[in-house]
Structure formats: structure tokens, C-alpha cells
Image (cartoon, rainbow, N blue to C red; front, side, top):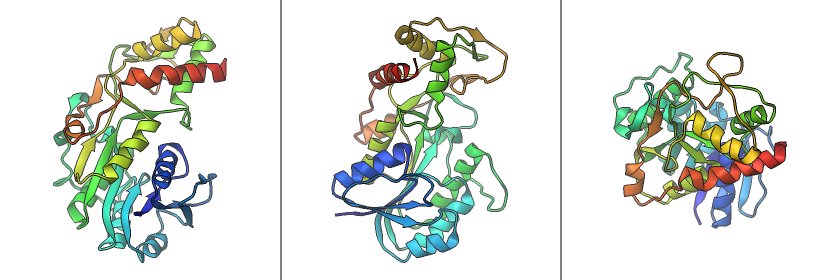
Length: 288
């Protein structure tokens, strides 16, 4: 039985991860501030604390852990708290990162496009989401002596997406409201919340270290996405290039990653069509 700690395990793919690990027989502890109802399963326990608190991290660092999953590290200072707390206390550290570390976007972006090992970090400055993740990666890979893997996810969609990015588009289609997007044909990568959890679990059983891209096979433009929604909802989407409430799923240019490294290590990703069509059908039923 492995002893596993999860930061960010009470909702979305972190919640799914916690349940998967508990069901497989791991002894799982979720760190929570108590703001969200935690999952319930045999093998799950909870630690009341704050990921950004040095005292919480020191308390957790008094124990040994086989694996730590960190879904809520957003800057190099938070990375430092973890490195200071868990030196000599963890067998493997899995950091949830993002494709936003690739600032310029592009097609089939490989992991080497952003190399965190020589990257700079500033522990005092405030950072936006992408830069914060870049510098968090850099701090971990430069300062941690324990094994670290940084999983770079694209947009994660699922029925449990509290940001409702897919639902936003479904509601606008059903209400005959336009989708605001400057480029209808720029392609973007996705992954489901189910597969995000499955991939994180797989990483915990692998020996990989360093950054790794994870995304469903296949990419979609906002035009492709709305075509899928229209087929299910029996709507005809309209588009505008300017306006309020622009689509959160319409990049200005192509932005998707290459996942060859994960595949060569043995992981097989679903195709985006295999899960997104079902998700759209479910969300349309829920919001008609």
C-alpha cells in the first residue's frame, strides 16, 4: 500500500484522482481548507490545512510519503515551500502544470520548447498563470533533490468543470447568442477530466521525470466545437469577431502539444471525439 498525499483533491480531476487511487488500494490523504465537500471512499483521509501556509507544509513534511500530487502550485514561492518541507520525505513528486508554459503557442509543441532547468524564478514577484507555472517548474527542477515530473495539461473539460467553459458555449447556442472569436479556425488541444486523472495515476506508477505533455489525440477549432454542439442541440451558431464575453476556447492562433514522449513511455490517449461528443450530449440535455 502506497502512502499518497494530494494537494487539490476535493474537486474536478483532483477529486477523480483521489478516488481512483483509493479504489486501487492506496492510503490517500487530501489536504483541504474545508471549502469544498471532499470525496468519500475507503482509504481516503483528510488533513485540514492550507497549501500556501509554511506551517501546514512543515506539518505534512514530518511524515514520509511515497507520492505527492500537487494540483494547486501556482508560483515558485509555493514550489519552495514544498521543496523545503519534503526534502528526504517523498519518493516521487507529481506537479500539475499547463500548456500555458509555452508562451507563444504553436503546433505539435514538444516538451523541449520550454526547458525549466535553466529557467529563472522570482520568489517575490506576482506572476500570471502561465509565468507562475513556468517558474514553479523551474524551482522544482533546479532545487528539489527528489524525483519530480511536471504534467503539462491543455484545457481540461468534463461534467465536473466548475468553470463551465463548455457549458458557456452550449448556453449561447441554445439562446441564439453569438460566439465571439477572432479566429474561427485556430486549433487547440483538450483532455477530459477522466483522462487527466487517469494520466496522473499512471505517472505515479511510472519512473519518468521532467516535464511531460498530456492531451487527447486530435485538435479542434472553435468552429469545430460549435459544429459538434449544433449537431446535438439542433442549433445554428453565429459568430462575431468583436463583442462582450469572448469565447474562452478560441485562441488567436493554433495552440496544441505533441504527446510523443508520453506515448513512447507507454501511455495511449483517447481521441478527443471519443469523449467530447458524449460530454456535449450530456450537457445539452442538462441545459435545454
